[in-house]
Image (tube, rainbow, N blue to C red; front, side, top):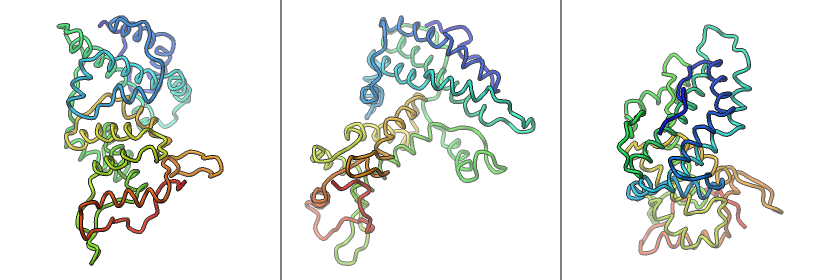
Length: 324
């Protein structure tokens, strides 16, 4: 696919970023999208629906990943996800921000550095996506113009660790962004959200209360799915599990993905992680999950089925959920 001239050409400074955002807002983004739709032989993208985007672009196994990479549906919803991030509002916010003068000539402008990396990765991955469609779906023998590694090097994670410890601006760390690390955070965030909501952290010996083993998150998901009609999830449980499994491949294999996916996932999970207002109950950060108290006992008992002399390790914590 022929991409718009200069689509990936801009520099790491405020003036160049502002000009690029204006160019995208004033027609280059639409020009790129039109070219993509022509290759896809589609007139329009699907309506914006976060549930369908998650189900369309987030894979929960390597087998499903391989199936998606050879299906037009995946590319349509990936483009929809890309466009939902590279929105008018996003570009206008950047134009407004980069119209402001930056007075410190001695320091590197980290705002420009960070958004340059984000914007470039979004555009680069969009080109990579469409060249993948031509290769894997249309079976066209094209000369690829962009290339990226599919795996996160462990060495760059070690470098990024210093940034987490000392901050992006410090004398002990690099400033490099490692945006794919967000997938690890998504994975741990979801596991803690589920374990905290249902207070399931492991098993202890009933006699001496020694911690004996963990309870796999897969088993917790299995039991929750039996009772999901009795649990009020602000995000469908099957999509929570789908996202968790997808993130697991980065944690265990360093398998990276398109730069817009973690952003879409963050937005999608917002009500689960930050709660919502319930009429007559108020609002709270834990109100993304709700259930009746007796259901918690049922779930705990099912965890213990066939296991003698054990209790659920709860650390004495209350459920991080709204008790209905």
